[in-house]
Image (cartoon, rainbow, N blue to C red):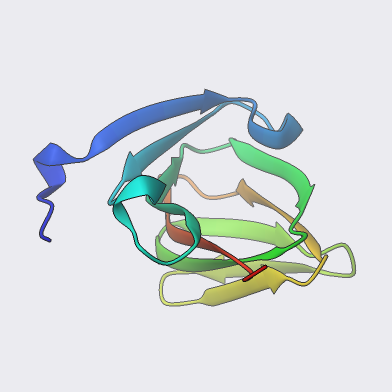
Length: 117
């Protein structure tokens, strides 16, 4: 299946997970289109100053691939600046949050896969 950018469903989540501002989702594929257990497959766009609050990933893994912009990622133990080309894996009960600390949009390709039951 191929989905062109102009065909992707857009969704805006306000103050996501207790964060600041809006997060725009461009859904590459919805979970009901993917055969494997997957909850999210989307590009997340955070404008400057926007964030996704701290949240835990129980029973699932989330992969972030930073496409552009500059973010500050916290994994509950340390804060790390992430930029284009960086990848982040959170799962197994771990938590994370991310904030756009740059002057341009922070764009993240995110995939959340759930563990087999």
